[in-house]
Length: 145
Image 1: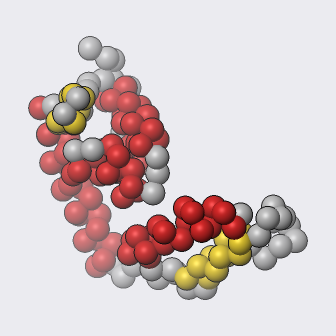
Image 2 (image 1 turned 90 degrees about the vertical axis):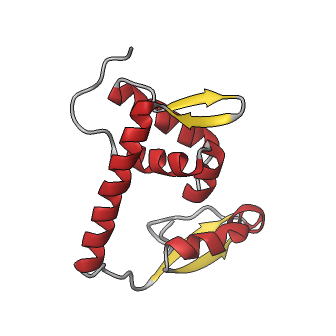
């Protein structure tokens, strides 16, 4: 048995756990979070190390929640629901303006553009995409990312 670490685990770790537990798949969680499967798996391992117990049984057939994982999932869902309600009640601040992104043309066409519709479903912000081979100079170019 692992030794738990003091304090709360990272919010990102709990968010990744929530997505993986809802989907019972690191791959589907990664797609939902716009990450790689490896990133989700590593974050879950860090969460398990922090907690001192496994939250998933990993089998060739897929993921299953452990008994502790099931309890954690219930608590995380309740906490996220409360947080979402509170944010809604306090009037979520809306983003204004445009986020300017510079990417290589091949990255834009092969990876970014096919995923934009999913991004917009989660983040209703305006994006300006500059497909350019020149690396961004954040001091002189008008780009954010």
